[in-house]
Image: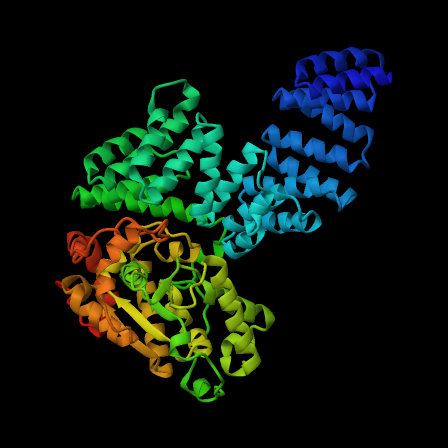
Length: 609
């Protein structure tokens, strides 16, 4: 092949003229039909024109000509992905890696293909390997972080993206958008908003940027900004914009609900329909709308579909949680017996003032309300929910699973190091004010009481309690980030068993450990917030309780509230959620025998409140 021809074709590709590159390649191939370089340039020119099916046999021919070329197998695999032949692509990527295990491009592209196949755990492993080989690549880190999020490894995603700001400016709009989307998956909403706003300044007409920003503004209670962002997308345009109008309709439905206009939200959702067969959030939204309209039968019908579709999706990342023999709440947490506790050595540990205040309770029991009240006090500092003790237990289990079976084996050094790790994780989430006491609110931390107490025996614990039927109903209406919790909520019956399982585990641990504990009853809190705030302040040795009563204003001033009740806690205390389950008595009646032990223990009436 004449070098000048090669340079000419390459120049055409570089100039963004793949059609001309194709013409030049075909002309040169008449004289040299088996020339690898010409075949490769022709395939590339076709690929640039999004003609993957035409490029495919050319890439395949190159693997026949040079079967030992890892690069050719990788190119062939990429073309197969473009043609939608994912299984064949995975086989070709595997061959490329067999020939050259250091082919990081093949490793990363195979990982992203596995994500398309929803084999998230395998994708995560491959992409983490690729990051290890090229740790400076933000592209690899973003892809690996997405796989981590899909695999429920949110800590891994945080570690991968912790220093993303060091790569700014990105000079790659698509990568910046994908980074923002992964940060959203990882619940890092303020950082994602910054990235999206920067993109919007440059690309105000980009529909996906507008949609993501609209979601972020609604999540941050900037409702007018959200409405303004989505409005231009709702104008009737070409058919290709239909998906953006569908997504925009879902944002507008959320805003209509925030404006207390459920009929408008219903009309929007029913007209739009789900975005895809995998779109379970559409049905959760419908369930909430029908509930507000008082159509309980339609609400339950929508929620059943929502949970069926969600379970089908979540089985890809956590199939064990949905197995027939899975526990109602499929979380393995360390337990402690009275005999084990008696063997715990006494160690030096932080005193009450230097220990976190732990707010726990089954989800939807009022823990966020408590947290916002406490955070409004100038002597306290809270943070969004983080599964720190789940992670600490994972560290111990990875070291030696037997430790979780008997925490008495932990030495002073071990406890000190685990507390350091805890404080490091806290410091990665918030800028710690050391003149305040930390409030750690995570509802299902109640499953981790033994390790919490082992590390912080002087801590104060507040347990949020609410009528079990109201808790069950509210949980069933939510889509939770945790696949374990989503599995527990997949049916009303399983959810009722999960509630009893978790609560009984807590009560058993409390009986053994006897922590400093206050039970906060949701119904009492909303009936008499002044008296209950005073009671909480006295328990925590805070003195003046009055700042806690201004929690709604304090919450409105916060940049972000990362829990499902972010829209409720910016409102003053009210009784609207008390006894809501009574509207669904037909569905809840079969659950009462399951819940009876907890109804009796907490003094709730199965016929009322």
